[in-house]
Image (tube, rainbow, N blue to C red):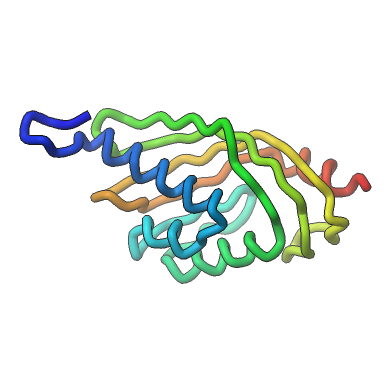
Length: 145
């Protein structure tokens, strides 16, 4: 979706940014995902605290890489015409490989669940990521061995 002058529409630019974010996550490339964020990125963790800044997000993704082996698929992305809001629904399948802070002990349990994220794209980067999934369902899956 390009304008008459060949530039991408705000919606197309935001969709491309969110797609690139998921591609980086599935490559297990935290640096690639962080490169798509604004310096002042706000990360709203599912049933957890709000973290601000690339450094906090980088630490989060590094912890995720260490504790979880996950793959996201069936990713469906929606975006507002002005490119300022986006949402993605997906399935995550993986294995809880190492103990994570505040979570039950790892038993290397495999798990699968739907999730969604809301984004605020800004100038070709992502300014906000808000994660949502059923944490109680995840607990029930990783507690089983």
